[in-house]
Length: 541
Image 1 (cartoon, rainbow, N blue to C red):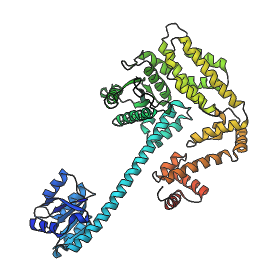
Image 2 (spheres, rainbow, N blue to C red):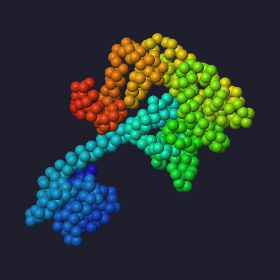
Image 3 (cartoon, rainbow, N blue to C red):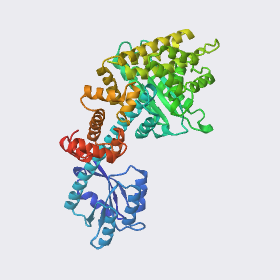
Image 4 (cartoon, helix red, strand yellow):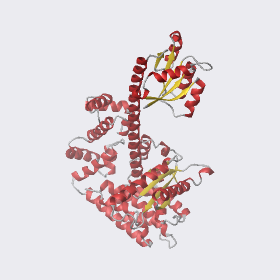
């Protein structure tokens, strides 16, 4: 039922119009009346807005034209119909220029009123359907963007980075531009929901629903604050992580702590559960992002539901500064070159042998090493991801070690496991090496990949890799990358949500014109033509 406001300075005319037809039979209901433009504006201000206003064009104090003009400024989506006499043609013309939908001549004829309302009812219904559809499209687009953002944040802490420039470019594409700032300061938070033993019994479905509710609550709490980005990992759905952009000024001094306290209150209030949290050290710049994440995991590992893991924060800050990208590069190089001796020498410079080195320092460094091991394993592991999962899960148990020797022994053991995977791939058949390269390309084709950079990454000669790739895949490396990009761009075009410039960036093209040229060359249609063709042949998606 659509709602109408009736505006006329003569009550008799309003009553006459109300009595003309069975309003509800044609899908309308008169919900309010006004005797002047001023009174009508006051009623509209109070709300809720009707779908239609029928207003006389000649009224004292404020005529219908002025009333409609103000309505259009304040309520651009409000439909208006004017009532006029035969002598009011100039007024009607002015009203039409303001966007009035139609007019009715006085005295109002029953047939004309019925016909007009029937037409307006159809228009309003179509408009509301389109509005609902566009809202659903926006929700789907936002959900898709959220998933892409969360997956990328997880990748940033877990995986090897192709290059800092590529990371910044992808952050901009995913509308995470604040993370690309040169003066960026950030902090990580880890939050684990703790379910008392016996509360869920063996009901996995109920546990899954509770995990989902926990994650949604975390996202909703973060959404209320600018610069806090949540992400999760399927390996542990009872945990959520948050990347917090630090802001200057005394009013932001305890910003992260206030957010964590609000999150704890919400979890206790809505889920009736307690949680364990870990707040990491503040780090400067994306290059130290993994250090910040490792420090939050250290803080989480030292926490209980009764107290937060403070640790010796100044010492952790020292460690996050000491584990530089250069240190990491040397460690990675030693493992990928299968040089355990050099790797251990590097470890000796990081893991101090001094007796007074606190245990948590060893734990932080171990967590940082686990992230590095995980990214190497992802690149070199053949036939599955068992080692990656094992390494990722070790984050949860590394703090259980009671001695420095135990932590160091665990690192040595894990380094050997990763080195074994590297060795297996590097000395395997060419097909296995190509599969590893292909897997890497499939996950990173949206970046500006080159054969020379991949050859260097996998310790191969560029010419040898080029021949090997074509031999086992059947097409050249560049054709394979193009094929991946085209497949992904077709999928994005079919969803009919993103602009062509957005799609071009998401599939690895620096400009939309270059993307359009490449797409037409491969599919025979321009991206616009392809989208139109797809929608015509798949009207229901």
